[in-house]
Image 1 (cartoon, rainbow, N blue to C red):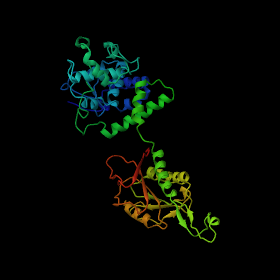
Image 2 (cartoon, rainbow, N blue to C red):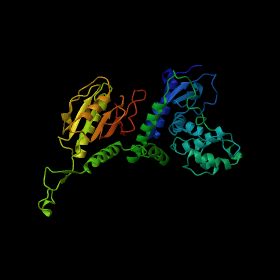
Image 3 (cartoon, rainbow, N blue to C red):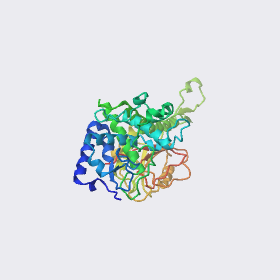
Image 4 (cartoon, rainbow, N blue to C red):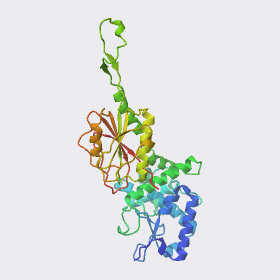
Amino acid sequence: MSRVGPAALPAELREVWAAGRVAAVHAAPYLATALLALQPRVVGPAEPAALAGFPVDGRWRVRVDPRGLAQTPPRLLAFWLVHQVGHLLRQHADRFAALGEPADGPLPAGRRWGIATDYEVNDDVPEELRPAAALLPQDVGLTPGGTAEQYWAALGAVPPAALAGAHPCGSADEDPAAGGGADEPGLGADESRLLREETARQVAAQARAGGAVPEAWQRWAAELLEPVVDWRRELAAALRRGVATVAGRVDHTYRRPSRRASAVPGVVLAALVQPSPGVCVVLDTSRSMAAPELGRAVAEVAGIVRALGVGRRSLRVLCCDTTAREPARVFDAREIRLVGGGGTDLRAGLEAAAQLRPRPDLVVVLTDGETDWPPGRPRGATVVVGLLDQPSGTGALPPPPWARTVRIPVERS
């Protein structure tokens, strides 16, 4: 049995595959990135024969019978590619695992779920690609535009005779990891997640630009993207809260006369003063902070200065890798000298911040998280950690519970 990528297809089959993929991208440009991520996997005679629908596994590999591919017109292949991408993006195999066996209805669970998911997917395939035999909810009197779970429940009341000719493609109820070993080409869980997020952004962008994007795909993209917290708003709120806590404090002083002194002649009254909040930014300048991280961190320092209106005397920036450098008072982020490049131990930076005089009221840590943390926060200070995201598999550690954490995404080229 042979398992190979698209380059191993014979020349004439590569042309068929390319033609089908071009037709799919042309009909559904909002799914272009996902369509291009599909990887054909040629299977031999030892594999199951039911490959007419070009079934996929959870690693974005399409099982291809060379003889069947050679006989498939490009437009029909395009339909199946858009169809299978719909199963993968909407994670139908994972959703099936959460359903369990239906309580009613004569259909086996796998077939019932396969029909339900095909209804959800085919309803959104562009009409110019959809063959007459495609399963649609209206074929059995169900309302278009529903979810697979809704169709799953409704199929319990559909007479079995009405579903006798309904043959789902078989991709929606498989184990997402099925279909080969880890050494074979394919997308992992993190890559699949990033691909779904990128596709959702493309769907949303084309919808905003007035493109012809089905409403169900727009809802899918919104549900995937909208729960993401606006980190800029969250960071600004955390910093304002920390500064407001200090600005709300008042103290008494005899260094200047009280405004009420004229009301009580001969008595020296203390005046009320409002302290100016001191802010210290501990900037991770270790080797693990590559150019995108450092650029984003410096930009955030500039944003902090502008948003809080903290003067030169009240804002200090402290660079730290394994050693805390001399803190600098800054007003413009361009004044910051990024010193470091070694390992990472921000415990030194937080300890140095605690030793500053006057002591800072708010400590902002900008880091990728690849550091150990002290057991407690600097005395008397509120700590906000701007955690710049990292690829999976790095040594990033979660910030401690005594710090307020804001996750900052980093765009990498």
